[in-house]
Length: 122
Image (cartoon, rainbow, N blue to C red):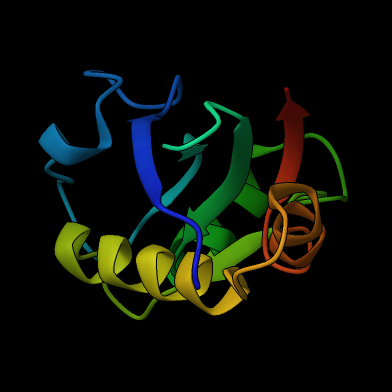
């Protein structure tokens, strides 16, 4: 039986409004921002904070030109042709669900680390 999970607190300090759900880009093909969200086990209240960079190819290019460093990102990365919040959420939910094998929460966090940078709290 799968764990009962909820994705909460989806935000980004890189965005003017901080809430990813409210963000409307000037150009959906030029995106580059880091996001954070929590995966919460509703039965035990264990939480795993996840981080992932959301980008488009053009956004990566712009970031590379504007940054003084050679390294563009050292975080987990999801790259889209065009930014679409609903598609992003569906993809994150799909990834989290694929990591939920019904065993313990810590094992699931280990699988989440294939896709996201994580910080586990008990």
